[in-house]
Length: 499
Image (cartoon, rainbow, N blue to C red):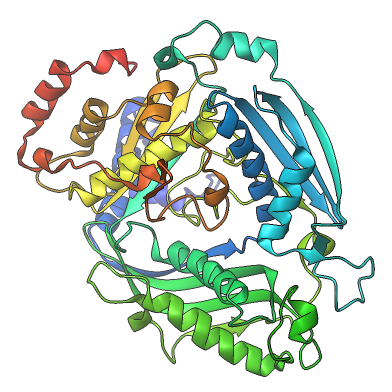
C-alpha cells in the first residue's frame, strides 16, 4: 500500500494489516509470542542431524603447563594445611615460569622446587634460546627462571568468607555461576566429541612417555568433529566420526636420535622417522587405540564410528618442532572449555586450577557435574545441565537451575528433578568440600585431560575424582510429582537451599 512500510515477515504471519494499531498491545504481544513459539515446538518433536566439534590440548601445552604448576602449588599447601586458602596463577614464556597470587597457609613452600618438579614431570628438559634450534623442546626444568609474586589472602575476603565461621557455614569465596553437564551417549556420561579429543591427547602423552613413540614432544592439540542424530525426545546419538585433527610437537624427522632426545636413554640408538611415518604411527597407535577404549552407550567401542569417511589432519601445518612456552606464552585458566565439556552444556567462565575448595568456581562446578551425572545414570533423563549461583560470603547457593532438553523420563518433569536434587544434595561450599573430599592434595592430577569423565579411584587414602561417583536416584523413577514434592517438604532443604 502506498505510504505504508512493508510489514516484517513475522507480522505477515499474524495476518496483521494497517488497522493492527487499533488492536490492544497486550493482545498483539500475546499472539506474536504464540505464533513465534510454534516453529520451536514443532522442531523439538522432530529429528535432525548436525556436526559438533570439541578440542583438547596435551599436558605440555603452555596453558596446561600453567594449570598443572598452579595445582602443584595448591597440593603442596593442602599436604601440610588442609584448610589453606589458595589462589595461585602461573605464567610461562620462553625459559621462565612465574607463580603469582594470594595464599594463606601454614605450609612451608619451596616454590622453586615445586615449579621445576612439575616442568620435569611434563617432559620439558631442554631449552635453546634460538627459534631455529631443533634441539629445544621449549622449556628446561634445570635452567628455567622461576619468579614468585605471592602474598596472603585479603583480610576483607577472609573476614567475609571463613573467619569465625563453622565449616558448614563457610561462605563462597566469590560470586559466580557454575555448570555441570552429562549425556548418556557414552559410558562415562561425557559428550563423545570431548571425550575423544581429550583421550587422544592423553594417548599421545602415554606413547611418548612409554618410549613407544619416543620422538613425540610434550606440546600438542587435538580436535574432533562428530555427526550426531538428535532424536525427537531431545537425546543425541553419535553416528560417525567426521574429522580428526592432531597437531603434535615432535623431534626433527630423519635426524633426531633417541639418545639425545630422551634424557637417560641407554638402549640401542634410533633415528626419528619421516613425517609420513610419524603420521601413520599416530593414526594406528593413538587414534585407533584411543577409540577402541571409549565405550558408547550401545556397548560398542567408538572405533565402530571411525572409517574411510573420516577426514584426518595430522600436523596439517607441517613440522612442529618448536613448542611449549617458547612457541606460545602460557597462562593458568585459559582452557576452561577443555577442562569441562568441550562446548556442550554451558560454562560460567571461572577457571579451576590453583583454587582451594572455598573457591566455588571449582568446587561448585564439581558438584554440578555430580548432580547432572546422577540424574542421567539413574535414568531420570538422557541429558542434564545443572547451574548453581553464589554470592561472596554466603554459604547457601542463590539459585539452582536444571535443563533436561526434553529428555526427562518416568513421568517426571524438570521441576521434579530440580526438587530431587534439592533433597539429595547439599551445595554449600563446606558441605561440598566434605562430600567430595576436596581438602586433600590431589589436584595436579586433575589439571590435564579434563576434570570430568575420569575414572574415580582411591590412592593412599585420597579420593580422586570423587564427583564422578554418581548418586543413585533410581528410587525416584516410580514417584509422582506429589510424592517428590512431599519428599522435599519432609527434608531439611531450607537449611541448605534458598527457597
